[in-house]
Image (cartoon, rainbow, N blue to C red; front, side):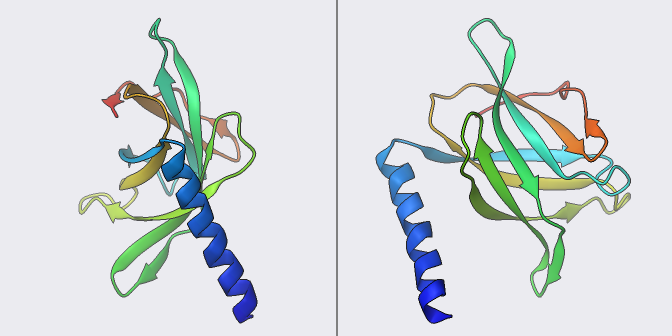
Amino acid sequence: MRHWMRRVAATGVAAALLLFLSGCSWVSVAVKILDFDTSQVQGIWLWRADASGTFQRAARFDFSPSQTTSSGEVMNYAVTLAGSTSSMDAQASVQRSPTDSNQVALVLLYPRGETSGVYSVSSFNAAGESALSSTSQTL
């Protein structure tokens, strides 16, 4: 068991080192999902605007069920860059609206390898994918 834990830790360190050496920087993506529970949201797609202003998929964030810890509600997620088959795991704090617990705010980490740009999101569940959000942010 300890050997397995060391191997997982070493793999995580190697992945972080590879990102550092490849010029990737981790940026925070603030996301607000208005119907998180009722729509059973399983994740989001992060979209980046290309030179013509057309949005292209940049990364997929797959959510695990949230859990309550001593520090509050948290959710593990895996982020996979578009065109990649490997993912990186991270964790986000789940902030629920005090007036509507169905609305959640998340700050997700995105390993951006390209220069800054304009990004938007869409969410998905077992039934399909939402339309692209009408709001965007520069990352």
